Length: 220
Length: 209
Image (tube, rainbow over all chains, first blue to last red; front, side, top):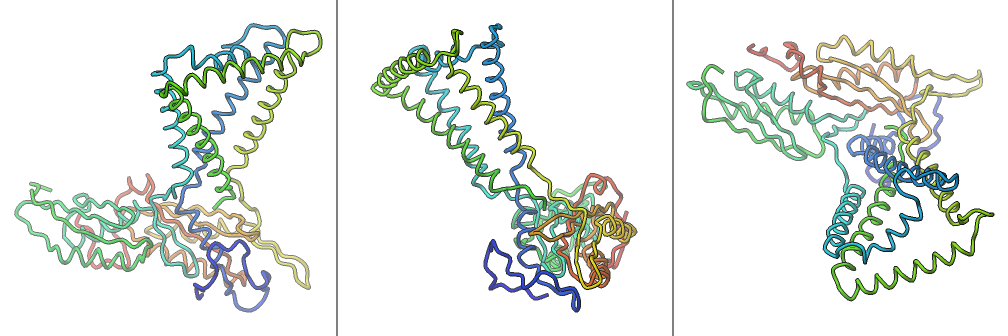
């Protein structure tokens, strides 16, 4: 399948030429669908945060309704009546020390800032996507690290447990710990890791750095 | 791949965030500047008087309470209802039918269970695969298939993808249509606890353990 890069980014109308191609070639243009799917798989939906926030507000709303009902039936309040709450809010500038108000206001503002950042930041997940061909591929960073560790260990001739790989968004750091008295062919390890990265062909592309722990571990 | 409205999630979080940020900043600023604190105190007193007047002029029957109290509770109920709908609409988007086509001879619908079980069975025997789970979703009004693969320790995702692509190619030939297929490769808990496999297509030597 050819990937038409001229296709509009984030097009809201999939310009698929007639969805029902019943017969003939199984080729059809999934480019727009894949772009959407891959983006959704590599970025957080912010569902957890949104649900937590909604549940919190829900509890407050439910509590306010409960207090109102208790006032209407003449029962004692759970914590405070709505009237008392309004009075307290109005008395805020006189009843509370300014220093305490500043602190409380700053705290609330920081909470708000956190919410704004969560809403605005891309929220990338620790995943990379491979080349989209017939299928789309999204790989967890741990799986990438595990595969790189295996290749590095094999090239170095050491056990996979002595290789530590951490995969970031654009870098893969490969650290090998060497048994004392043994040398490691760093070039071979670099070549093996680069070869594996080439096969995976990930985006965003990963650049590998290979370091050998010089301390040397006895019996490792 | 589900149908969560991510824009709405972010808009909701942004709305609450801006609200908190504005309230917090205003309270802190008003308390910090003496002149503003005086203005706030005056404004608060005036607002209290106005609210008191409004409550007194809106009695609820013969009780000592006001309609305003009931209106406030009604708004709270409305907000709560909207929030419940918002929470319940998260996720979803699974579909029971991956493909539906009607032609001269009638209609054909491919049940997602058929696709799921056969893809899972085909991939489960791959030496690098620790677990497979297939699900289907609705993406832009069409079916899309998601293949979640947990790989064994050290297995190259590229190898697993090759195997999965081969299975998908078989399905393409069978359906006569190439549905969007997403392959996800994870190293889950089971994969991390598992022993490294000694079989890998690109391997020239096996692990020295």
